[in-house]
Length: 120
Image 1: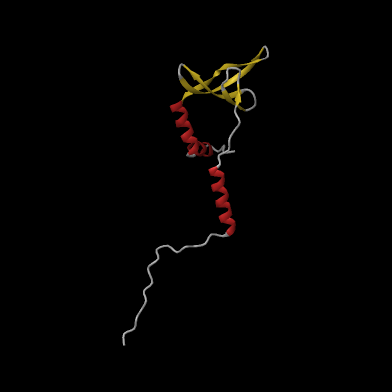
Image 2 (image 1 turned 135 degrees about the vertical axis):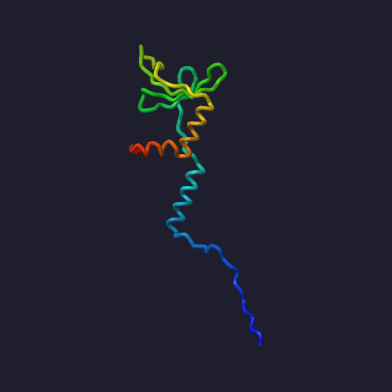
């Protein structure tokens, strides 16, 4: 008599159910990633949008100059009741800003900060 032996298909990876707590955290992280936080930008007298950095002394302003969009990070000072831009600062072109943004998003900047021991 010939015996019929059933062969089970080879399973390369066995599925493991995630614990409910871990699954909830993963789903929560996915939801947070799907809905990026939006920082409210202010508007200056010239109609340019800006974000105050470290109180009222520094700003990141999005402006247009000679038909170029710039991201300007600069110190400001008060004179005669007006807030004016100081000499200390940098204006990034869109390409420069995109390079910086990529380095921030991929964790390169945070990695360099952590390597220096100041990852707070």
